[in-house]
Length: 167
Image (cartoon, rainbow, N blue to C red; front, top):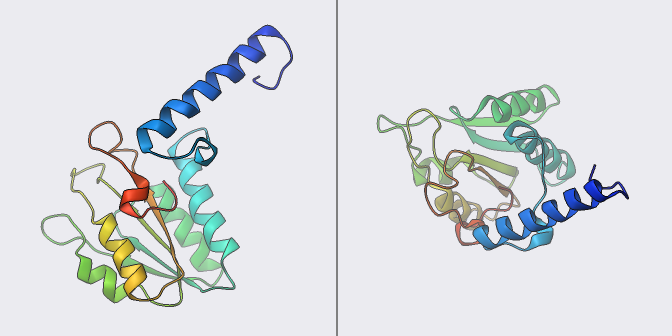
């Protein structure tokens, strides 16, 4: 327990601080922007549910891909039952999503765009930066969430450069 006052607790707290510092440096992020969860599913659920519910007065639309991890797809499906509209972009024959698909799907009602950086089954890379451009071009208030679990450590992941709000 990193909150404990005994030696092992304090050592655990220091380990977490050191880890946060290393991850922030790798991602070119601020240490205060790094949050630890139990894994990718919890992180994706926090990003999807948290963003959409916090921004529900801003809009009612979510844009994602039809091939996201189940933790994203199930969260979006649950939000649809709450009345949110969801658009599921389908990859083309090459396994990717096109910038045009993003531009056509994102609008002023979109509160969240959620897409992985690298597909966990095909390895296809998705146009996350094009999603940010479509958000800007369409004057959308959407935040951009990117599940980069499969890409991290294999390709450079720079959230700020990609225009990602939640990684």
